[in-house]
Image 1 (cartoon, rainbow, N blue to C red):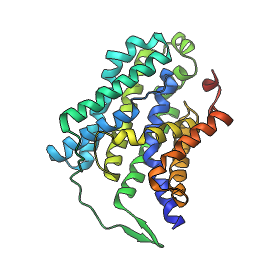
Image 2 (image 1 turned 90 degrees about the vertical axis):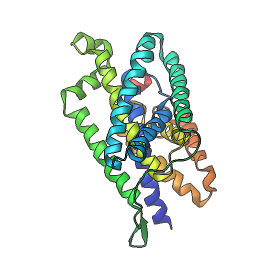
Image 3 (image 1 turned 30 degrees about the horizontal axis):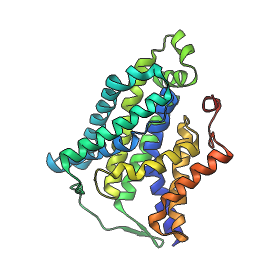
Image 4 (image 1 turned 180 degrees about the vertical axis):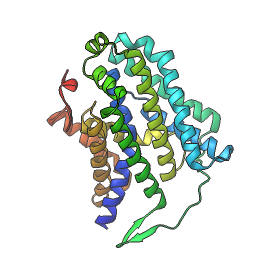
Length: 287
């Protein structure tokens, strides 16, 4: 039983990894916690559901289409809202992200109602391996998340764009002196964050179902994962997500499953008291 919980916890952590990575990327570049991350996840899930169930696209194609749509929506939010408030401080941006969260969620609710939706996806029998039960959805989640994490790490550490993003995250003024345009980097960051949250929305929709509160159910664990890893640290976000996923699943040994999110709250509280920069947080967070 414990081995099965560990497996489930690892997959849950992978589900949290992409939005936590998106959250930490936007925090690193734009210096504010984006509270619309859950609504972006929900919007991405609905975009994939429309492409898959209404337009008849295969789920893989629908997921790619959803990533493109959410990248454009995230960039549009930056053009219309965030870029106009960027010089007014992180609190103003945080409040504006709460407003965008309400707008995105209510667009989904107005268009599709409160009913739960499922992807047109053929369910396969779970694989039995050494007593473990591995669902097809878990395998898809693991493959997609690991591929995305590798691509993001290559982008950040082996490309000129990644070096520019890290330069803006470390010191925007110095990066501007060296010819790095912060506005362009911010827009690209929003596109990447939008794509990652859309893909995580598709994976979350496969794991549960698509409804207007889908992203809200993941909001606290996403923030707990990003804070645990150290806001601004992509590697930390991934490690933090896996730790939170494992902790939530293993907590079911002693807690009713409805109370699993208490673990995320407890992690955030403990970190704020003991190590507020997280596991991989550096000087940029302390500033």
